[in-house]
Amino acid sequence: MRQLPILAALNHAFQSVWLNRMVALRMSWIWYIIVALVLAFSTQLASTRGTADAEAPQAQFFIIDALTLLLVLLVNSSFAVHWHRYILLDEIPGMFDTFRLDGKVWRYFGNSLLIMIALIVPSIAIAIPFVFIAAVLAPQLATLGSAIGVLIVVSIGFLRLGLKLPAIALGIIDYRFTDAWRASAGNSSRIAAVFLITLSAALVAAAVIAALSLSGSFVGVVVGFILQLAVNWFLTFFMITLLTSLYGFFVQNRDF
Image 1 (tube, rainbow, N blue to C red):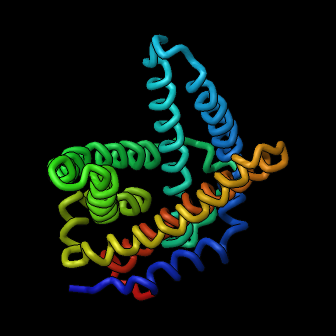
Image 2: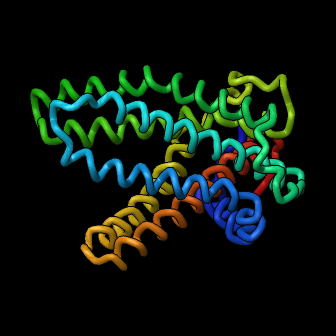
């Protein structure tokens, strides 16, 4: 049973994105223009919710949020398929290849949704004990405890089950979720640590962006939005690369 080296995995993913950033930009710029417009629209929509009539129907906001999430997931699936193949096969897609939604992209998208749905029940199951404990002992810790518990479950579940996703990108049709779970057995705590370290870095970046956006100046808002796009772009490719690294380590027996 292989044991994942935490720092080596993080460093390998970071170096893979940084050293190949121009390739990543070339294969993602078309989609990311769309993502930027969607994020700008969502930001504007969020700013109007607070001033909206409290009795106004909120269903439209929920539908827009859901469609935005699905669109971003589909875009990320397109990035991921081509990026997995680039990292694992040295296959460089043509300028407009990543704009096509082929069978691999739709399978990747569908399986990503399945993983997210599958993690709903265990996430709720983890959150419930924290809610009961907080109700009796420390109500102020309910949100924090529940969030930490859910994040640990999601990180372990998604990154372990997600080993199937690079297989989809490579065109391997008989690799199952059970195979992915079995391949990464005994590494749940290490995989959670990798995810939580990444999340901590992302939260620091988000805090800086929020400070700029709340500065009140037009320049601060614009710079904050540009930084948000840059950080989102980098984190997207970093997480895809991390999943690629885990697949190479656990499934292909590669070393970092």
